[in-house]
Length: 443
Image (cartoon, rainbow, N blue to C red; front, side):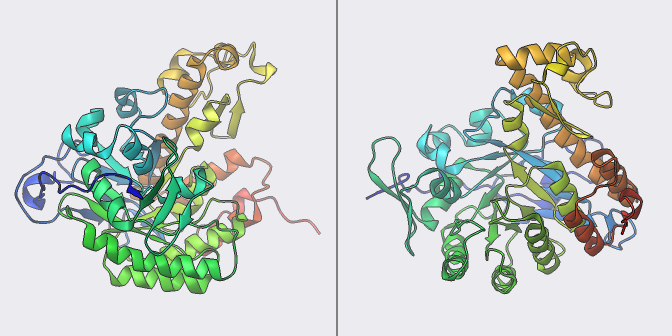
C-alpha cells in the first residue's frame, strides 16, 4: 500500500517575530502582506478581538477580530472561497484581491495528486506556486476521500482508498496529511479527522469523535512547522451534545491555535445545525478563531456570526454561479429565467463590483445560457457579495451597529416577515432582537 506522497523533511523552517513581522493594527496598510523574518522562533499567530472590554467590536457572542497570519492580516468574520487545486474556477488572483478575498482554501487531497506536494515544495510552496500573496488554508484531505470515493475505508491507522489515477490502494494517515500540508505551506492547516455524515446515529458517531481526538495527538507530533503554520483541530460528535462537549474539551486541553466545527452542513435540519454551532462556540476559547466548515449560505453565516463563529468556507457561491444564480440582498436572482432577457438593470443596484458596474441582467442572461464567460462573471459577483457581507459584519460590530445590520439583512431576505423559526430561536440565544423583522403571529 502506497502513501499519498513520499515523506520528506521540509527544506526549511520559517519563524515569525511578532515585533518584526506583524504590522501595527492602526498603521497604514492594514490588511497588506505580513513580512517574513527567517530563523526567528517566536509568536507565529495573533488573534486580536477588537474591544476585549466588550465595548467595541463585540455584541454578546458575536465578535469582530483581527487575525494575523504569516502572509496576511485578516479581518473576521470572513468567508473563504474554495480553490480546489490552488485556483478559483474562472477567476484570477488579481480579481480575488480586487474583491477583497483574504484567504483561499486549497484541497490537500487534490493538490497531493496533482501537481503533487513534492513539486509544490520544490517550487517554494503553494503561495509562490500560485502567485498568491495573501493567506491560504488547506484541509486535511479526509473529507474528499470519504465524500468523493465510495471505496474509502477508515481504520485507526488512517483512511484507505483507491487511487483515482491507477486504482491502487493508498493510505492517508494523520502523519501523512500533516507532512503533505507542511510541504504545501498554507498559513492554516487542518488536522485529519474521522469524517462521518451528520445524519448518521449510533456508535459510529462516538467512534469517530474519539478517533478524531486520538488522531489530533498524532497530527501535533507530526507537525514540523509550528512556527510557520497554524494547526486547527476539528470538533466532531454529530448532533449529540454530550459527544460534542467531550470533543471540545479534548481539543481545548491541547491548546491549539484555532478550532473548527466539523460534521455540519451535510443534510441535518437547521434547528440541529444552529444548536451545535451555539454549543461549540460557547465552549471554545474566546481568544482563538472558530471556523464552521462547509457553511456558505449568507443567512447561515449571519446566524453563525451572531453565535460567535469567525470563519467559513463553501463552494456554494461559485457552484451556484455556474447554474446562473446570483446572490443579492433579497436572496438569489436566477439569471436563466426568461424574465431576465430584457432586464436592463444590474444584478444588484447596491453592488459596486465590476460586473454590476458594467453588465445588465439581460446580457448576463444571454451569457449564462450560451457562454462559459457567464459563469465567470456571476462567480465574480457572488464572491464579491460574500466578501462584502463579511466586511459589513465586521464593520457593524466595530461600529456598534450589529443588531441593526442583522435586522436590515433579515428584512431584505424576508420582506413579509416570515423569518424561519430556527433563525428566530438562534438569534434569541445570540441576544439579537429581531422582533421588528418578524410578522406578528396570528391565532
